[in-house]
Amino acid sequence: QSALTQPASVSGSPGQSITISCTGTGSDVGSYNLVSWYQQYSGKAPKLMIYEVSKRPSGVSDRFSGSKSGNTASLTISGLQAEDEADYYCCSYTVLGWVFGGGTKVTVL
Amino acid sequence: QVQLVESGGGLVKPGGSLRLSCEASGFTFSNYYLNWIRQAPGKGLEWVSYISSSGTTISYADSVRGRFTISRDNAKNSLYLQMNSLRVEDTAVYYCARDRSNNFDYWGQGTLVTVSS
Image (cartoon, rainbow over all chains, first blue to last red; front, side, top):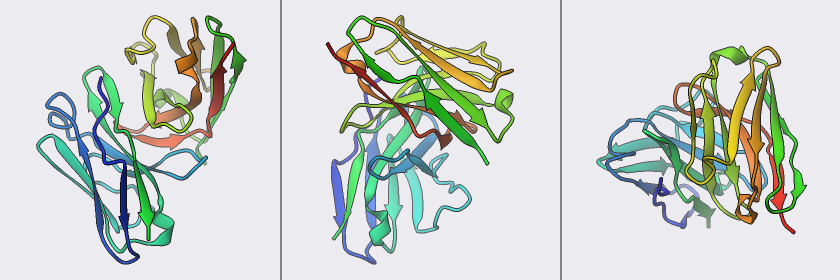
């Protein structure tokens, strides 16, 4: 159950778009459309932002979108805002349970 | 509204035991899979274990298998994690999280477990 690979940090200016990648293997991301993304502010519990690769829960801004190609999933934040500065984690189902990515710190310049 | 409230964390010596609890409200507890997910200080999220709605299906991460036991009491709307043979590397905030069809839609606030001599 090796962690999914995410960039440690991504930054962008307000209004720009950024994309966070999440690379797994054929045993997790590549095999199931069960990739989810979580936003976490420091000291707080994570919040579900995207599920089943590209679906948004009610109440999540449509500036957040998800996609997947092969063993790599991606989270795109469009129209970056100051409030988007947080840590983001991807997560994939595997036959043995769940695996998270190492997390990406998003900085709004 | 959905609420998950963890308790039972604290300071324990290596080799010791601790039992975490997660009390749920605001939804039909017995209809949902539940998970324990942890986060070491300054580190990322790590899935620990899940239990099915009836308690008959259980899975553990390799890092805790054989030492931790997940259970639930649907009559008490409660989830548990019995942690034995604790190691320094088990130090983390432990979250319980509801599984809404293969994603974690609600999380508790977490409870801190510190394993240190």
